[in-house]
Image 1 (tube, rainbow, N blue to C red):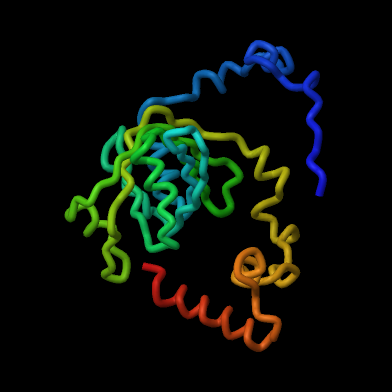
Image 2: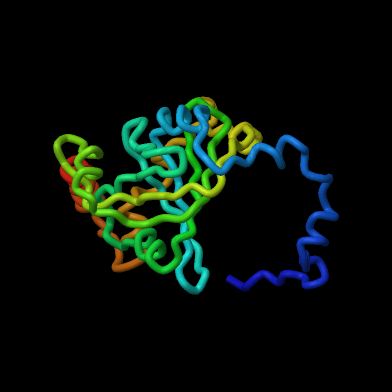
Amino acid sequence: MSQSVIKAEYLVPSETALRALFPPVHTLAALKSLNHLDPHAREFIRRSPFLTIGTQNREGRADVSPRGDPAGFVHVLDDRTLAIPDRPGNNRLDTLSNILANPNVGLLFMVPGFDDTLRINGTAQLSTDPDLLRSMAVNDRVPTLAIVVTVAEVFLHCAKAFRRSRLWDPAARQDRKEMPSLLKMILDQTTGAPTDPAEMQKVDEGLEADYRASMY
């Protein structure tokens, strides 16, 4: 596939040029940014079973990773601090390694059925405090560590993106079977997937068994 050519004359060269393309920011949008977790932010976090966390490594290479658990899995420790349990994953440790190199993080909290979201920016550390980790146990399994975020900025984000995408609309749901399974796609991209459908089914069943055994 040939590489697309981006026309240099249409690139936005500066923030001044960027802001000239748009109307001025609405007063409420400018004022809504807080430096602490107010009661509304706390309640949003209590209801949220899912967030994404954005990080960067030392060179500025960005990454976004999902985190999910039963609603309220993120613990608010005080008005400026929250803690996210780190559950078993693929052990790439992209997010955790990035935090050690560059502590700046961005969080986006979602609540099923809510079109608005909560955004939090701040700095993160990795903690193995046993008391904190015990408070985050699920099915008697304690996380290896927690991501502790010191809050710098908190604000609610409007519903436009979710309404455009119809993310929670049942009529907009797509059939997962229209694409190959996760393992089939990864194997196609790497070492090669089994050509025998029955063998591939066994591989997929093995992943589901692993999910059941290693969620926590």
